[in-house]
Image 1: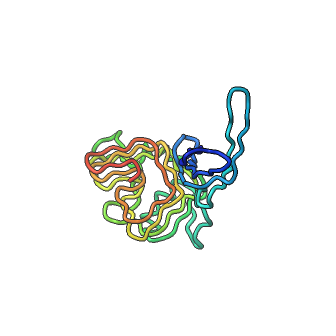
Image 2: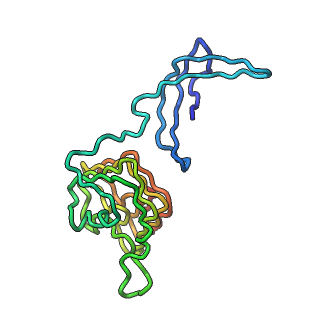
Length: 212
């Protein structure tokens, strides 16, 4: 989708335009401003149509590059679960496929309240920060459930620390419930998040955000 940002389209004046890319859900992935190369006016009965050719800048496309050498490949829900407990919070990870996390709705039953489930345990626990890289490579984790209304720092990641990077990841149709500091992707972020999105419901008491 192209929106004109100059004074008008004609053969003499080539204004800047804003180009916006959307995903299949209609969400904005990225907007950039670029310039028009050529403009042609085509006359049809009753109106004129202006046709503009636009060269997109190289950074318009999602910046999905080759994963870091030696990155640990994640291809299952169980491997996601084990990032904190087995592999470590300062490693590099790459998601190599989409993952349906629907079954997390019935993970980790509350021993004091049978039939109630805490769902997915956020990566990092209550006091550890993710310090590595997580490259989703454009893949999506869907239907993730986290139900921890009495806990702080709740999200897919608890906290992302300084220097850590999370990129190219979608979290779709997630349900996240926490107390304070609650986010879809991360409860707290000090690192860099690039080209990521969340959809679904995120709820808590204070300091709640859809992404962070």
